[in-house]
Length: 341
Length: 224
Ligand code: B12
Ligand SMILES: [Zn+2]
Image 1 (cartoon, rainbow over the protein chains, first blue to last red):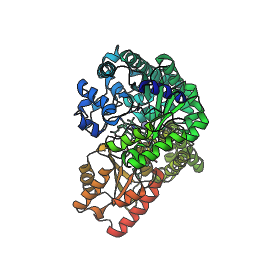
Image 2 (image 1 turned 45 degrees about the vertical axis):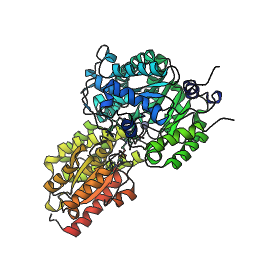
Image 3 (image 1 turned 90 degrees about the horizontal axis):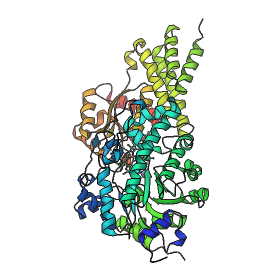
Image 4 (image 1 turned 180 degrees about the vertical axis):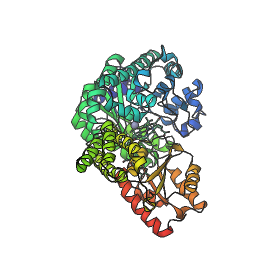
């Protein structure tokens, strides 16, 4: 089996084989960047989104400064919308970029430019992944995040308009568009895997059941995710924000390896529903604990997540930029102390 | 002889199921039958939206259905508006509403807007990512009764406190009531920054805003 490395450990844990690892992994496949790290490595937002050198330094800071056992790119959810023509508001040091306005007024207007993954910031992302692999060898895992089809649809059509269309337009039309976006995600993932990434994270925050029905999730989104997983052919983690309890029974049908659960999801319950069919990662609350708590409350929440059965310790969602380093580190340290007996 | 009750109940039903065409048709029928346009909107439209909000709260329906219902109602309002005889006493209270600077999450704010306007409030929508100063400017300009702010992120919540402080500095804090909302905003925090209320959702916002406006009218009268 050879020596256990963070990469081997992460891949075991993320695919539901944590018992075969020496201990639980603490690898964050969601946004890792914080203001403290930006200052420490002199790679602040918003420049770090677009400058390859700064982007590299900030991605590496996840390991160098916090000790997270792996890297993840990019730092935001706007790459796809940007390449499709949306204007981006770049934010500032403690504010993530956001999409300013939709670009398409109707489903029929939607068109994917040829070679889209050579456009916008895709090449920067893949370039930094390649450099991370080169400089850190095979020791640490790299996660490539894609913004999921539902969220991208919200960006490019306007979320409210798209929500209304889910009720008014023929379902095949909606599915067709989501599938075209999924194809961008797949192409991006394949290029990332060639560049050195090991894990793909589909982050689809707008697909939360605070907004859409479990029925829509089951009928329309599950087949799309499954299509993606099959085409990607590498470990896939799906992240959806908020309370996704009602989605749990449908997750095995997506064939994802792991689901990254937000703080509203009760892990013990999720484990009972999912058994060993889908691994569960995440769940250390970002706001109440990592951002607003202290190292002690972070340790407590981390141990709670582990004892409820999470397979990889991670923040429950993208880390808030103002999270103090001592809190973020406390999560990693608590995870490292957890050895299986 | 057209049955007025039937028009009303079909009208409500059309809104609840989000059937825009039917809502428009029934609005026209209502006018032809001599029903009061103002009542159609504020009373029956409002009742339909209450049903919607209750179903949403109970997770029987989700945001797309709420938006559909809202669209059906606004289409009907367009038809009914020219026929509304607005009396002086029924001039609706003005609410200045927006998502605070740095925050683009506006789905919740839009639901609040829908519910408040269907309950008869005049809502001045500042949109999302609203510069804080704008709340003060518009409140003054419009002689608003209520300032409503939404924030969905811990990083943008402090903007609400700043707006309240700015209202105080401008000497107009006592001219308006302030309501705040958004998933991370707790009642305790809202009161601690000096807001008047934190309705937990869009339907609670209606009742609470009504009460606050009544109180305001007693405190400061109709003058600004
Ligand atoms: C949809 C969504 C998005 C969409 C927004 C689309 C849109 N036009 O609104 C998109 C994908 C664009 C998005 C982007 C981002 N998001 Co977002 N998003 C969400 C999500 C999943 C749902 C929010 C929502 O619409 N809920 C449904 C509505 C109906 O509920 P509501 O807003 O709470 O409103 C109700 C009540 O609160 C109340 N209410 C609301 N406002 C008001 C106002 C008044 C006056 C009153 C009386 C009542 C009231 O009434 C409403 C109706 O009943 C949440 C997670 C979650 N599940 O909550 C994250 C969440 C809000 N997002 C988050 C983040 C971090 C982001 C990003 C920074 C991510 C990134 N890395 O790019 C960006 C940038 C955003 C920015 N600069 O503002 C975080 C915020 C964390 C924090 N720091 O606090 C959340 C909490 C996710 C998480 N778990 O971490 N997001
Ligand atoms: Zn999330």
